[in-house]
Amino acid sequence: MREGAIVKDVLTYIALGIALFFALFPIVWTISMSFKTIGEYYTFPPVWIPREPTLDNYKYLLFTWTSGLKYLINSSIVASLNTILILLISIPASYAIARFKIGQKNLSFWILSQRMLPPIAVVIPYFLLLRMLHLIDTYWGLIIVYLPFNVGFAVWLLIGFIQEFPQDIEDAALVDGCSRIRALVRVVVPIIAPGLAVCAIFCFIFCWNEFMFALILTRETAKTVTAQLAAFQSPTKIMWGEISALVVLAIIPVFVLALSVQKYLVRGLAMGAVKE
Amino acid sequence: MRKYTYLLPVIVLLIAITFFPLLYSLSVSLTNFRLTATERPQFTGLKNYFEILFRDKRFWRSLYNTFTIAIPALALESVLGMAVALLLNRGIRGKRIITVLLILPVVVPPITSGLIWRMLYHEKYGAINGLLYFFGIKQQITWLSTPGLTKFAVILTDVWQWTPFMMLMILAGLQSIPVECIEAAEVDGASPFQRFIYITLPMLKYTLMVAALLRIMDLIKVFDVVFVLTMGGPGGTTETISMYTYIVSFRAFRMGFGSALSYLVLILTVILCTYFIKVVRGRG
Image 1 (spheres, rainbow over the protein chains, first blue to last red):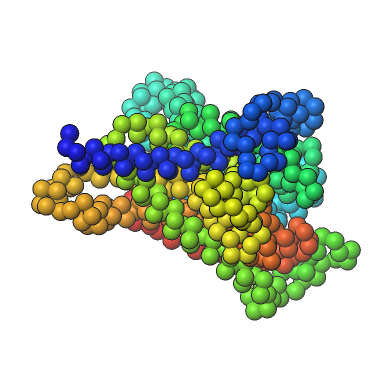
Image 2 (cartoon, helix red, strand yellow):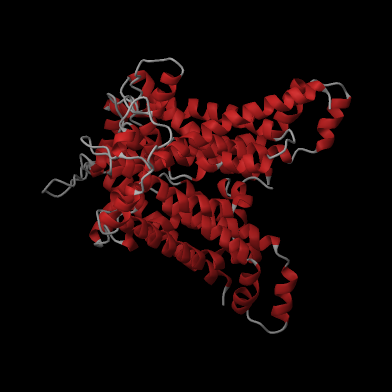
């Protein structure tokens, strides 16, 4: 290899190293903090690596002050139930749009545009309406208001998956006297199962990460982990160890899920706008 | 089973959970409804809208803040995202693992990225001042209470979280450029810089456009990060339009006025979204 090429490679790695530091340092620092004692995070200059790592912050969140565990469970319940409903609603819808070509592109764009709704524009009527229906601070309240955001995205993503899959197999089933709905359930759904999983994971992450609705539409019973994280910062006492531990616990599930669908991240993030 | 039956659940859902609430808030925006008031709300017509547009300095300031956060953030994210994508696209070893590690910030809940950076910016115990101390800068910088710096702090947090998104989109775009185009230019003696300006950039135009529009639609709604970092402070210098609407509606409980504000945000988004769809459809 020529000397110039080696120098270029070294420079590339140095530049990428800086990028990696910028991307990962905040996360690594937070993980380190979650294992520190109060004496270690209130020092300057900071202690970079805890000298006596402790699990106290996690123990406090999960076992002593059991609410930490409760908020994590609440987030999981809301996200899971929302995801199930989303799949039930969007499988038939995306099937109809992909196969019957209903409404041409207008309908699918209209459904997709739901994702762009500014949360602040709908949170006021949601708050007032849920209050009338006595659904403030309930799981169902949150599950319902997350539906429009996820449905647009899910239908859009699933149309792509259904179109990719050859129609012949389905036609064969139809010729054999299978009804449309049976063909959908027995033939299409199993074949696009990986696509459904990707779709479910994105929906789950959206619910898990959402903050504004959780803040405004829950109090204590249905409070999710993101709402609790914001509530931590009282002006008098900032419990960095506990905050960091809860941040880590809130991040782990999304990391695991995102890594399992990393192949589809571009499609998911761009909502199918960029053809791969 | 009729064809439209398949669509029924989605249509019902969107009418019940999008259209109806939006119509409801439109009607609320035409009243002086306050949650704390005991008397019935009165119909006031377009009064709220006129007040916002012609008398409310705080609204215009929040709009100004939103764009002075959104535009620099978008610019930084595009430039840095492009730079990292080009580096990754040089066919180096370990590209996959580096990409995976770089995109981690994207999936973190925005509220946690706000909290993480709040701790990083802390004037006494934060890691940023700690790092600066390490490099010999002993001054404790008050990142979150100095008016000029605070906006920068919000922008940097957003750049941390969303640059990987731009990077990922641009990388996908780069990989779809046919190798022959680049090679042909190379044979013709084009310098790397010329190849970038005359081939790569024009071929990335669509990807960049889509990515930038998706980002700007998100950026004009920015709320979570501001909520934990600054609460709109100091002195309202980071109060974005979503933050202002939140304070009016859920701290002052002025639902009528808040609904009118939220409608203006909605109109802004609809304009951008329509343009976005036009761009995407123009391609398809």
